[in-house]
Image (cartoon, rainbow, N blue to C red; front, top):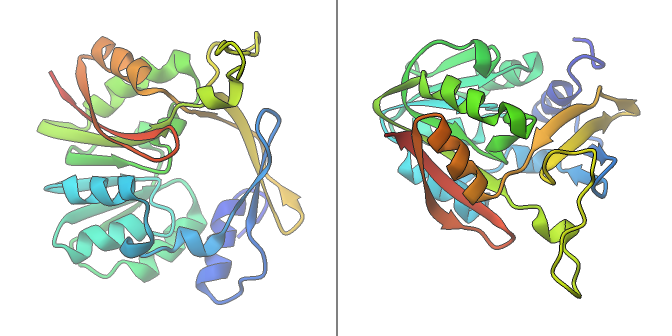
Length: 240
């Protein structure tokens, strides 16, 4: 497996096979660099934040786990009797998923969500699920595509964060906004692992009211399920 083309997946495989030597570094030109600890990507239900636990408890029927990664969410769902499709674009993640998921009813799919065609009762988009929209301008069309993957009474469970706190002026409450960006939640990241840096990619954080507006444009209804401890939230999106 070429580490340059699947840096994230290679890191998952390394950890799963007992070759854990370092974590993934997340690089950004607009935010402080961060570390993605590999053990956290293999977390159990008890180690998950409250919003993730709530989303898993609300999941029903057939579930599509988008960006399944190492399978933490899928593992919990299949252990509770749900029929899960774990979808990821990373070949390394797929390798790990095939070794971790045990239920004969679980499916593991190497594919982009935007190419997927099956329909589900629940679509799970966690760990900043709005990130896959990439840009604010793509949000409505992305939600329309997701709507096409929902069964009649299906739901999308999605979390995100309002990055307003990064740009607020403490004195007057105003926002400093990068004029080159349509929205302050648009961020560009790259990953670094074992001295190799990935290609950069766009990632979108959205405040709930904006997500609600774009859901309406896509013929969907967004409800706020729960707020987190640090400007994050879980939303439930359904057909109108």
